[in-house]
Image 1: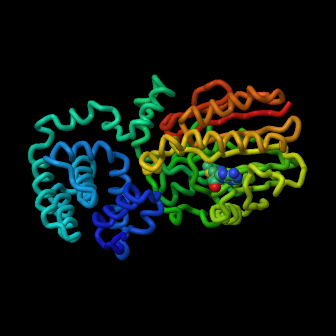
Image 2: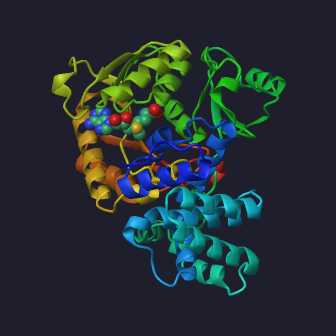
Image 3: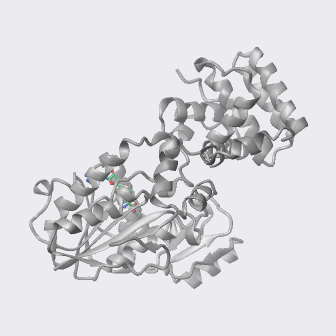
Length: 438
Ligand SMILES: C[S@@+](CC[C@H](N)C(=O)[O-])C[C@H]1O[C@@H](n2cnc3c(N)ncnc32)[C@H](O)[C@@H]1O
């Protein structure tokens, strides 16, 4: 049983990490369950910073730890192993006074009833603090790219095979903190005017060339601090995800299907740009509610339906769609910088299963596209097997597909589609393909 929520940010971070790495919880859910209960905003912030940082650098921190220990800690002491990672992370990468980092971390071991570990952690962290990298420990750990960049072996091998020239920069970008990017609701306010409103509120934000509706905040803030957020003047969405709506190019008279719509970011964006009639589907009814909430907040309307897009006989009225968006379920490897838990929760065996699901979505929905209509397929994955391989095989099997090379402001052409690798122009990793029916 997990311990009851702690008030101490480091103790809470241990619980968050145990939930993710031990019990396979998502980081968002683990934080919702274990973030400090009655701490002030600073404690929650510190817990989050530690949890994100340790998950980003988990393998590297673990390798450093193991060089300091004579023998590995037992399975039931995984909390202490993670506490050591928390200690190293603070000393290496956080702006916390070293003496506080050590003493507060050691205190957590005592609170958890492990005085023997408190002594051990104190000795190890103080040795590291005193000697620094005197014995070349960091260089030895970092000689192995899987340790340096903290990725599981399977993912490293996959990215090396897929991106022989780009994988080092890609891996580094995956460990960077992502910017907070806004999508301005052009129906309500121009980007230039909204940028001025942000500036008047003390929030500096920059345009991103090629991304019509995007503003990148120079520092993240809570959405409550964004002028007009609750009235729908802006939404939070990475700039690369803002390329779907212009690529889909829906007109007012079109019937549009957003087949995998939740939580609704792309649905809302395409309705902000034109007035098509929209059917937003998602197989997850809980997530679909967020689409309705999103559309309500930005003041737009679409039909939301909980349904499996691969079984159209259960929900399709037989009228073809001029536009279909498949923002397919995927590994999420393009958004690891926002969700570092993905590195440790995804398994290699997930990839062929996801590729099957992606292919089934394409096969099921292609017949619903009107002649001359357009289907945009995208994922937030940087793994070819979920992207270009799926599309190339689909195109090869269908005579009525015309590939339109997407003209995007970022990324590289990879055959039919365009791949954006995480960090290019500061955006998330994504894949886009655009198919027209002859
Ligand atoms: C990448 S997310 C979509 C993000 C969304 N387009 C946005 O911009 O906010 C993929 C979604 O596909 C949904 N999904 C997975 N399989 C599905 C299926 N067979 N039919 C409909 N939705 C599905 C998942 O529940 C998930 O919400």
